[in-house]
Length: 263
Image 1 (cartoon, rainbow, N blue to C red):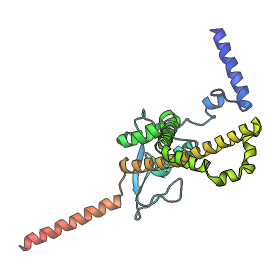
Image 2 (cartoon, rainbow, N blue to C red; image 1 turned 45 degrees about the horizontal axis):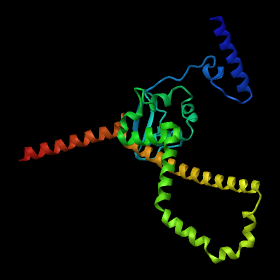
Image 3 (spheres, helix red, strand yellow; image 1 turned 180 degrees about the horizontal axis):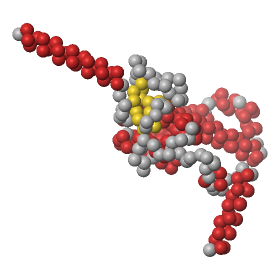
Image 4 (cartoon, one colour; image 1 turned 180 degrees about the vertical axis):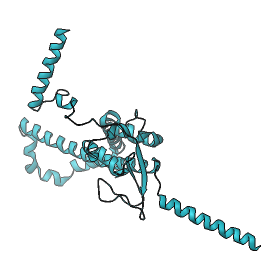
């Protein structure tokens, strides 16, 4: 037991020394400790309401939420944030989500975890499961990369006859061979130069694929935001709207009663 304790102490000191030099091999004392006087984030339920022109809601991420959009807040508070803005923020930079509420609530574990009883994902249905769980979360985005790479490969295979025709026409073009003295030196260049050209080509292809992946991922995140807007139920309704509807219904009933008496 004493040897195991000494081994744990040595591993702790080693991880702290490596973390001080910018090399992280695991959690450190800072990651597992809570500042003195501070409480760890607490799991919390949520309230959702609709921001309208007549009753706009303030948003922590912006000044006011857009009209006819849903806003969400920890239960019992009025610290609202737009549902779409919250989801987009947790997809782009999740480290900034909980500081929006001064790190008082475990928002990510409470609202976006399948094992939580307060999870928002239980309302999204099979569409949300495909978009959120498979395309965005599975393998930390590796499923989306693999699916996109497979789609690009399939598109190339479908267009292969046209690609072969274009390449053959280009290689047999007289204009190309008239410029042989200009580009022929690259064909007979030294091996390091060819490796450098291949590396530049690979970086260009990788950068293009990364840009394509980023654009597709942004589109999928927007689709996920739309699914959340349609699926999450409203738990707090505007009291003024409800009272006005009740008043209007009472007036209609009074008019119907007057008509019956006159008859």
